[in-house]
Length: 105
Image 1 (spheres, rainbow, N blue to C red):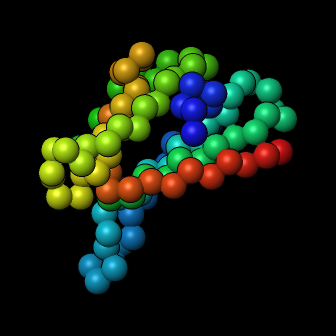
Image 2 (cartoon, rainbow, N blue to C red):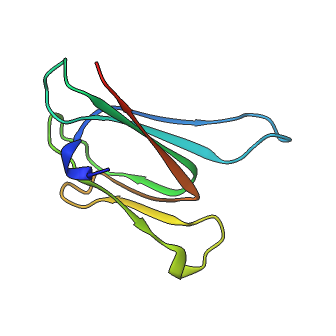
């Protein structure tokens, strides 16, 4: 995915399974779109086992550039990716893995 193509946050959802036997950490879902047009395609990014989540100021209809970087060289358990939005300091976190789902209207 080209992160620069989808930069408007439509939704941000943080969840977890509340069951001691099935708990696998936090899941963060970002739904992004490329423009303010309602008929534009969207992309869901779903991040698993989110750690060290930091959410900064969200400024409304700003274009956010979300980067997903490999963190494998750091050799930290469960932290395979580092996700950051640097232009507006909107968010940052580590995660185990992620999915990308493109949704056409």
